Image (tube, rainbow, N blue to C red):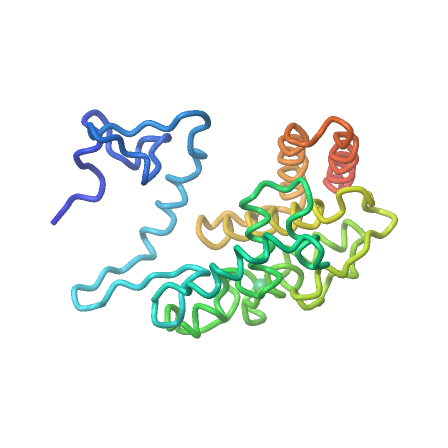
Length: 256
Ligand SMILES: [Zn+2]
């Protein structure tokens, strides 16, 4: 059996111990090198969080789990086609909300999946027979639907309440593009803000589910503020003031 932790790619350290390891970046000579920014260092703890929960069975068939997979694990080329098509339709209100903003591409993709109700959640995994039930692992009070992740679960609900943006609570995810800013949220780059908040909630949730790190509300907002400072750096100069307002908003929300 091939050993997962070490292989032909490295001689000094196991793959998982290398913060810069990213599958798909293997050079012909067997070395791995990533130009520019390296992979976030949280990859290893994330994997370590998942491993104890993973049970490999000799008889079980491999199952692929991705938003672009059908229930039978085959690739859903229709969804990929729709993604490519959606990117070319800037005049549609939903497409504008998703793509015409300063969010990083992977967050835009997340929002595209979210508005289609296709982000990874237990109701979808249940349909694909990956899990036995759809109950939310954080609150255990409801099924984990895309809506539950974004605004129904304890973390998300309290998050929006603290920001004074309760209008999003319970809203179907396919209508999120109809949201309009309230007085507490800057109008400029509003869709970037919504994408940012949903992405941060998703991150906080993954920390709770996969690493058993249930963050306090103050910690979630502190992380929002820190990440908003990073997003600020990639925004055009004329829009940096918007990110500054977000930072202030999160800093205020962080206070008890
Ligand atoms: Zn929940």
